[in-house]
Length: 226
Ligand code: HEM
Image (cartoon, rainbow, N blue to C red; front, side):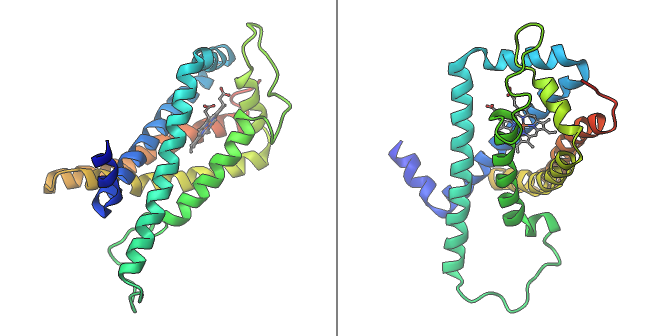
């Protein structure tokens, strides 16, 4: 355990832990999007699924604490690595070599911060009911929390549609570069694997964003109603 901790403090160890926590977060986002797609099966399906996830408090709180740990460690070690790199090269390059770096890779710090701000807003919105409390206490005919009603109510408001669509753009950019570069950090050096890893990021990002945007637009355009 102590060796594992010491290893995570080295530069290579930090990169590996950043990669693992990033992939863990990506896994959650995919799982969350797939679960949310049940909105297309109607209120009963989504509310029963949400109630099932909350049925076992130990499981729920382990998952929440695990996710919190992943996010804190990921951000903490990323900042540490950036400071370490700056200390190693205090004078910035006179000419930035941007030709090879993709737009997604150059905007990782910006998209990371924006994603964190969105996550805080999202938790205050849907989980905490602080941003809009009109649906947070409503129950459906089974006595389950009306998560479906809450989601539909949110995306009938154009301001939430804009915020959530903007968040999808940020999430897509962050996942697109993050997943590929995490797999490359963890993977073996092989041209075929490298090509696969480079394609995996945009693929995962595309699937998650497509699923989330489908939910937002289906409600905004009136395909799904309360
Ligand atoms: C259209 C996109 C999304 C929709 C409709 C959505 C919907 C929801 C809803 C309804 C909840 C509350 C669930 C409940 O109270 O039982 C929730 C919780 C949550 N969402 Fe999202 N979400 C979306 C995107 C995202 C994204 C992109 C992230 C991550 C960046 C995210 C992270 C979370 C987290 C961490 C929770 C807290 C889970 C918990 O209560 O333990 N969501 N989401």
